[in-house]
Length: 592
Image 1 (cartoon, helix red, strand yellow):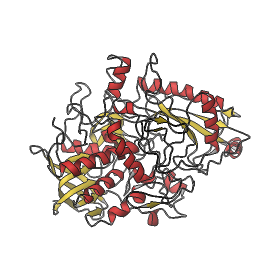
Image 2 (cartoon, helix red, strand yellow; image 1 turned 45 degrees about the vertical axis):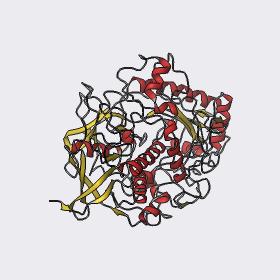
Image 3 (cartoon, one colour; image 1 turned 30 degrees about the vertical axis):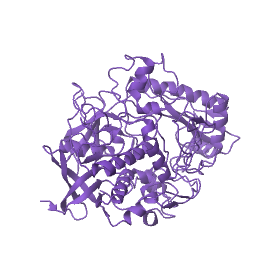
Image 4 (cartoon, one colour; image 1 turned 60 degrees about the vertical axis):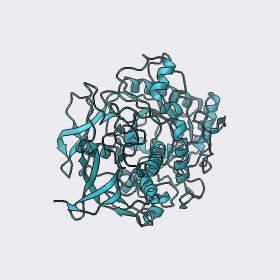
């Protein structure tokens, strides 16, 4: 029997970036907010201090900051005809656990979507014709345009202190920035990170090919920065320990470094750690979530926390699980096309990888930041190039450089090198400091047979069904990957390397073993039509007026970019609607 607690104004389920932002905005509006985090608290002083934080084995290999698959995981099948099996070892993606979530261990790459990504279906239809989009590609428009979201992109970038250079400032294109980006009203809050040798090589080759190189926007501080919340972040030390690690210098933006210090100091906010949310108490006739039930994993006690407002700010799979288990919305059926819950699950597609080797150049791979890949181009991203006759839609952002040189997992060797033994050891010693990668991060557009639902067989530690992923790569993914592999080959050859690996293209079934990205999206998608979406333009659930869903689970499809910038902008956009409209007059913000 759950212990009933006193009702609070709002509950945030998950205290990562979105949970922290929503809690901060709600407390500013005078609400009493409880933040429930299933893992432990994590702080820079206690958890990420030198020298222990730079433990490659502990964090990068043994995955200290990630979800424990013995307690919860997801199951996978490639088609609806297969039987799904649980993923028992994380590989392809790495959900975080503990205060800060994935915002603690991420690299810091912080993009805005292209304007055409915001209205993708409409844009492609207008440009290529009403029959151009294949029937099985279930892409949708975001219900919020780039221009509407631009001030909130700006606000999130200022919270994080993003380092970069504008390429489109109020309509003026600026060389050295991303000239393909939507118009920005303000320059980035911090100057770009330092240029690496790999970046200089990429820049020269890209310009010779007629492309438009620029440095990626990075939530890694190029200089000390104080954000609008009054929190000061330190300057990046280029230590090469970003992804899979916390930051000892508070130079990588995370909830701990840019918002939690002021949130935790607010008497209107209460953080409860080790609070493993079990279920939402849903009043279907009233279209309300009345309370949240959670288990304290230290004592085993179960609690029920009533709240007037509930914010789902957990990871993609947890958002879907809690809504599916409560029955908030109709489960998607790929056969009939009915239902929206679980629909349009997407991931990320690799456009191949090329490693280039230079006998006469010192690369210094160990002096890097998470988002300091070196240099990027957007010439082949989204619909920045003509797709007529190509047989696919979408593209990739292409980068060259290094984000780390940690020796356990960084061993570049030229083609033909034995995989082990004396010659392999000689090659790793020779080329470690003389190589870097060129890679393409491709879009993954929604397909009618890629979706999430509840597994009928397997359960987690709380006895709940696992989320079942029905997911595979499809024709559009293979074609965009092959095309980008050709682009990578051209760039690599233009660098005139001593040796290079052959460009690779995506082949075969989706594989959960090698790491690809933690860019899982969809299942509780946002839209203008409640028949094809789960939340409205303000991220309010169509079937529960007081439930707001944050994070990448609301994406109708996945662009090539890392999702964090969009996630943060949407959180501020939703928070403004809640604090200025919903609190004053609770109810649907959009009429179905």
